[in-house]
Length: 158
Image 1: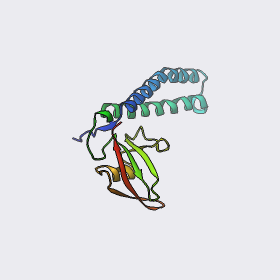
Image 2: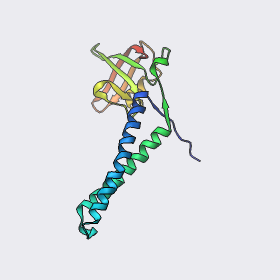
Image 3: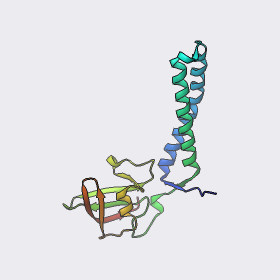
Image 4: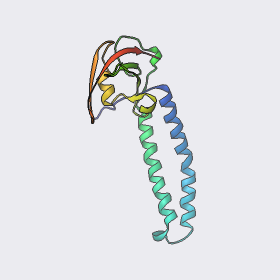
């Protein structure tokens, strides 16, 4: 029997997933109504509204299943309760790039990742390279444009 792997996430990511799940569940009756209305138009083989509604129903059900799976395996981590001197999930890490320019990232769950706002998934190459490192340790990451080197300047749990 396969073991269910936990899905680490912050509390806000969990709340966003549950809100998305509620919105999708609320959409179900509207889709059923759209299917019923389209059926009333007659011949289903050439009924675009019917096919569109059925396709949307399939998409919504797949998304609901995916989100329910993530929620059931969620391991909620509060960075404020973490301590230590190593980079872990939930850490906010300040790195210095090759030009000594500081860059700040927080390591978050896959559903919460948003690189533009400095939140990277724990499964990203950069996060995997950072996890377990301490202040003043170097990190090397291979990216499409070549190898990048960083120095861990600060680790925070905020």
